Length: 185
Image (tube, rainbow, N blue to C red; front, side, top):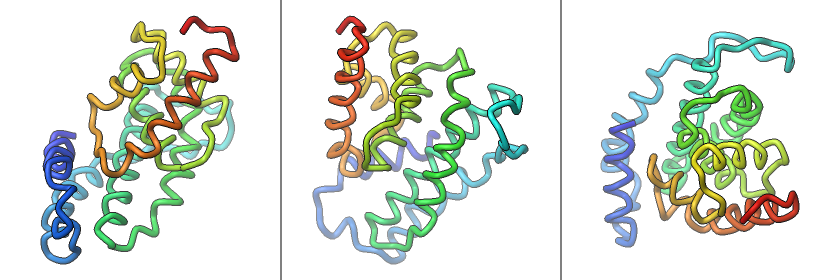
């Protein structure tokens, strides 16, 4: 994740320069080493066939993190006008792993980040399950607003030019969920 953070910092600092987004050797040399590191993270070693399957929470969190990182890489590839055909299938896999986050009681900031990356990448309303997972992580972090949740997620790895446009609607949806369910704002 350190390499992706470094790449995110470089992109956040240079994303306003049009020549930065030119595809080719430069984009490959920037994305390649980070993609290699992410792809070297072991996959979840079981197939989730039903909600009754028992999955080690550590393995589930690792898989959700791996998938969220791969989603970010696919979004970056798309921003560099490279082929990112894998984005849709990665989002589907992340949707499959998301229910497992409800069984995890550690690393609430990481769980919140995974949910934010997923919510920003799908560009559609967040599911009730995902909102409940976000709310649970927020409670564990002692935060009560969507904007605070965004600030926490942003601390992990955040690429502003890819995710910020969608982050505001996600924050608003979180705040509506909290208000509708009468959670203290």
